[in-house]
Image 1: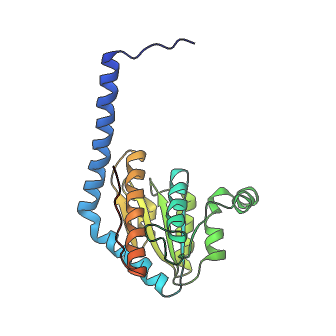
Image 2: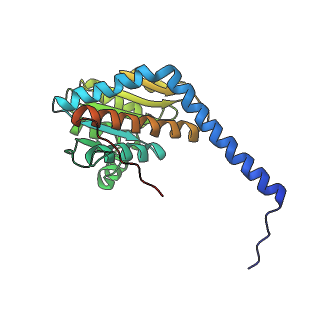
Image 3: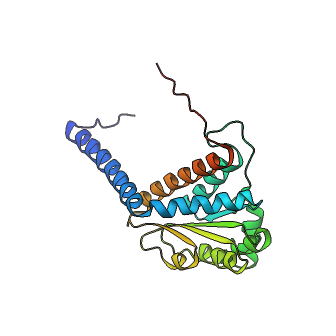
Amino acid sequence: MNTPKQTADEKEAALERINGIVHESLDAKVKFFASHVREVERASQLIIDALKAGQKLLLFGNGGSACDAQHIAGELVNIFVNKHRKPLPALALTTDGSILTSIANDSSFIHVFDRQVQALGRRGDVAIGISTSGNSPNVVKGLEAARYQNMHTIGLLGRNGGRAADLVDIALVVRHDETARIQETHILIGHILCQLVEEAMFGQIEVAVTGS
């Protein structure tokens, strides 16, 4: 099958678009950390204090935010940088298909997180709700349940923070209109939290840089 070849103008336009997207993403990150670096540090310390006290971390979100919840939980349970440290108790509430579908089927998808928070969360645990709009109904319900159970709450949010911003102890709001740019900033925040937590719990290690 013959496919049309890309013209020089089309190639140049694609390259410009790629560079534009990269700069948009970098700009979103720079603007967020210029005004929220203290909140990120507070969030890391909240998680550190909870883990040192024997508590756990629950994370939840939808779609790409569900992937971010699982990503962060995986880094903490397994490793981030330190290959020789103990696992940390973090659980993404987006992974058990039987629980998710049974709640959605028997009640409503709105309750897929708050039911799990009620079942698994305890006073002093940390709940991280992730929503690029801040208005995802099931994330809002999950955070409400966490507050009711006297859990600490952190929001990885976007746009103006939405309803979730008023339900969390620490609101990390990426004030951008594009979901992709918000998510790209969220996962950088998640990586920073993982690294700060790991270093506080187990100490810093030297990372060997290899290359030819």
